[in-house]
Length: 185
Image 1 (spheres, rainbow, N blue to C red):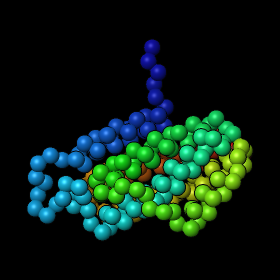
Image 2: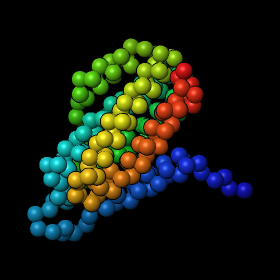
Image 3: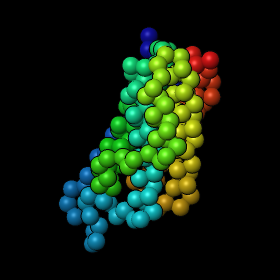
Image 4: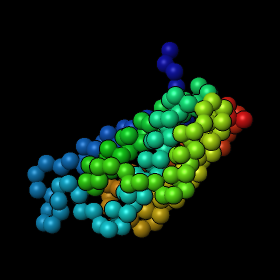
């Protein structure tokens, strides 16, 4: 008997599959066209801003989730953090391949303060702060994706923004139910 996937699991599989497909597209073989570099796939200033903003906020989620491995009390928070680590690692890899950006830029001051707070707490206090930070970060990330979808023209980045938006909405649903689902009362 095969187990059917939950909506969240199916969404995660779709994003991972799509990211794998996008990564293959991001490394074309042979000439692309005049004035278009293999490494940047015709990235404009607006595209670069989208990539940098996505990597900046994603970098905060990545570092916070790394801390959750050792500081979180709730097994569900640690499981969410592992999911977030995989997602942000894949996203940064694909965006790096498309844009040439290899490392996330430093966080903005507010997110840097959150990271510093997370580094000072453990257990249930970490779980609560991590949950709050993830909600705020996912809301920021959603705005970035939706802004790009309103005006961005790079087909590969539009695909990533579309898939990311879907995954972010799923994560926000989970996080909004977080006090009960993640054990961060």
